[in-house]
Image (cartoon, rainbow, N blue to C red):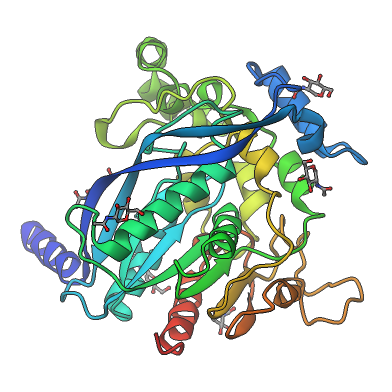
Length: 419
Ligand SMILES: *[C@@H]1O[C@H](CO)[C@@H](O)[C@H](O)[C@H]1NC(C)=O
Ligand SMILES: *[C@@H]1O[C@H](CO)[C@@H](O)[C@H](O)[C@H]1NC(C)=O
Ligand SMILES: *[C@@H]1O[C@H](CO)[C@@H](O)[C@H](O)[C@H]1NC(C)=O
Ligand SMILES: *[C@@H]1O[C@H](CO)[C@@H](O)[C@H](O)[C@H]1NC(C)=O
Ligand SMILES: *[C@@H]1O[C@H](CO)[C@@H](O)[C@H](O)[C@H]1NC(C)=O
Ligand SMILES: *[C@@H]1O[C@H](CO)[C@@H](O)[C@H](O)[C@H]1NC(C)=O
């Protein structure tokens, strides 16, 4: 009987599973980066907090304070990606390219928790017939890492996204067919990169969806402060550290003993015991890569209680990803307005922290229905513009109970653009 149930469950899963392939895309790119040599790379947790103090000091622009000049960074980098099609085969010659934000990797769009019940990719492929490409942003996760201050910056990451998109359009990514229509979907920092991409290269994209986004910049310091940044390799030594240190620490940490002790169980050891997925090597981040401190800071940044499963918050904490000082110093370097002439959907949680200060409907008296709606002014050439507020949701849209209803809204919108 037990076996029979297992077999049925396995069949049920394979019927609904999308058809995916993992791949590494080599991109040869260059960008004009900031040189931030007035600031030393944060090497310790004291430095990490001092850096945040610099970043959030009132009346000061840390980007200008740190900047000593500009330099061209060039190289061939590797982008770790997952390409998916509907389980019943490709339906449309349109691909969605999804760029994650800070604190996550490509799995933000395809969360495995509860049998992929929160997966954007499942909805886009199996319910709406789109093909999808999710990827780890350059510098993060299984993509190439680099110098966290002067190399891994927004500009180089946008160059990687542009190159990958051009390769999709001319069919030069090994194993992926040629696409004449590309929709870019971003979250947070991934939305600001999508915004910059389509301003600089307005013909690379046929439509854009900016989730967890607004044109307001004044609330970003809440994110910097609320993260309580620490060195990634100290915060999750087994997962983010170097293989030698990780092995040494792993040999003295008695996980089974700790987690079965009722006294120890009162303490959250998620980060101490977080390990790489299925026996892969530790991610080996150098000093300077920073991460939020624990599950409570993750909640403050991304989640609105009580509209999420606490189990998913712990899952997200165990699988979180870091951010670089170079990214934090360049994430605000986006143009005031965009030359993009396709359709634009801005889709933001009602209680988004970094882009709405926790309340998207409180515009402080400005004549707009919401803070994200103010983005219409940044798109003077757009074919159409819509701002949608997803109710009962914080900044981390994919981690809330009602997430899939939001994915359906987004995909209905894409369907209605007549691409
Ligand atoms: C792709 O990689 C993920 C994470 O390592 C793994 O869970 C998944 O099984 C892989 N998928 C395929 C189709 O190989
Ligand atoms: C903070 O700013 C000061 C003054 O600009 C600078 O000397 C210092 O290196 C900065 N510290 C960090 C950790 O960024
Ligand atoms: C901060 O300084 C940078 C670099 O000089 C500049 O590009 C940016 O516009 C400034 N930001 C603000 C809000 O003034
Ligand atoms: C997935 O979500 C649906 C609706 O939100 C719920 O009814 C179902 O129990 C969930 N399944 C799992 C495996 O969590
Ligand atoms: C395809 O696009 C890439 C990225 O722009 C470019 O490097 C490459 O030369 C193009 N290849 C062909 C065959 O058009
Ligand atoms: C769930 O999301 C959908 C799509 O945005 C929305 O119409 C619906 O009202 C939401 N449900 C709740 C309970 O917030």
